[in-house]
Image (cartoon, rainbow over all chains, first blue to last red; front, side, top):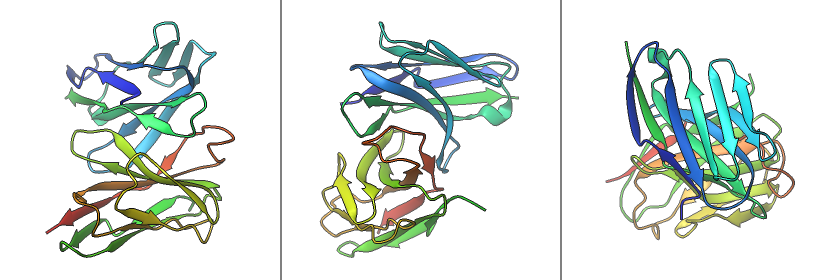
Length: 111
Length: 116
């Protein structure tokens, strides 16, 4: 079963707007990561947040983690057309050696 | 230039044939991984290796085989036993083995395999 589930499945916004994507998971985790994938390409790591952290920033990215609700959100501020991509969350369950990816949110930023 | 490379970018296979996908990294990473991605889906783990000469099955290992004879290389063979092999295959690596810590994974550009 999917450990990480992103929503929405697809999001279309205008350049300059903010984009928020959510990820929910089922079991306790050590950390949660967000990755980006341009169409037909490999994944690129964006940010890692540990289970004892609540918020993390990297440039225009802001990630929050709520372990009580087993959820995370990725906020991209002042979006650009170049942010158009699919975004995946990935979690590692405690006691597991595997990183489990969700199905992703496909973001389209219209110029 | 450090990185992880995969070849070929596109691969076509006839039914009943085995085919091997290449993955090489010069990042000096201990761990390497193979994932399969189907359209509109997330990544599913096929095999992973934490150290040379060792590898473990992931969630969908049936019909696939791997080897890890060198730290830099982790080739994946898609055998004729894999019933639905058409997919996008991604190789990744991480600094430390996942049994020690779950690190950032660095991905190659992928190989798109099509069975004719």
